[in-house]
Image (cartoon, rainbow, N blue to C red; front, side, top):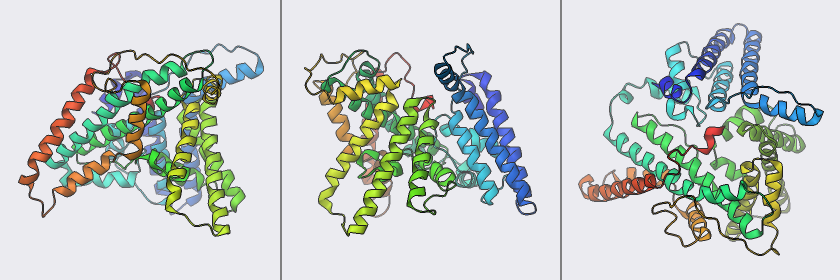
Length: 458
């Protein structure tokens, strides 16, 4: 079934996915077999496996960009056919690199190919994450109790899926035309237009990725499998360090465990630590996409982290303690830094990013005409009298509303004694019916019939 799901997008690239799985499984078996008796040979296999994975990623994801960059710098025109980016290649490649490193560390040992095939192709995560670890998934797959239908998991999984769909189709897609018109347009912008586009994309990507995460976790729970938490109200963070503990949590964990620590982490002094942070985030930016804007976005967050850690170190040296009154200011500063970063992330070119950033500081220019939505969003979006009101409402949800996991957690705790299930049945039915109604309303406002997730591009 997972391969059928993947083939639905492009059957031609199923062979690449299977080749990657077979190669990594074989290398993992070699590493596990040689780890105790011949650690040097195991290390050679590990290096070879990582090199093969990165080489595959380099070719399919970055070759077009590298050729275009070479043409620009050398003043030539190499006419090479564009390489199709396989869906989900970044996620299944990183998942398998983690498997090889864990095999070398002795954390996992997999000699059953069907199990490994299931681990990599488990379809709720295959397209856009989270990045999985073998040790956290295989015990769940092997647990006999997970092979029986659980009405409780079906109920909560379906609720989580519907919440995610509402976020994506009802909220993210309702603000997408606002961001698209600003970022995809031409000509100078004033502050009103530029900030509308930047904040529009800020809430769009939040609800788009949060919605996908909820849907993936919800589908997985239908099968009694718990995927790792990947999104935890990141705009409520009070520092960039905290932001990266809440945004794309599985990728942050991968970058920390397999790149930052491998580079030396914080074990070789503060200067080396800052260089490691910067390099890790710059490479993390490139992981998201082949382009200078992604590299700058990652490097910018690397610089943010350096400043964050430097301020913390200075505060400790001066004996300055955290105070509660600082929270609104640090949260606002963190969100501002994130919004500036999203401009580079969304822009299709460096010139496009600078155009929006320049507009964000042009407060002397008169306001322009408002952005007209491509289609009405049934209920969502029509509730607000203007683009600004709708963006502000969505931004408030990201800053103050409880996230999906917390809502589901509350529902699960309410089921426990001393709360009788019969007493809570009307409340549960009302909540589910409301969620289902909002889901139907969201579907009625879908743009162009197809609404791809932003992270499908990575």
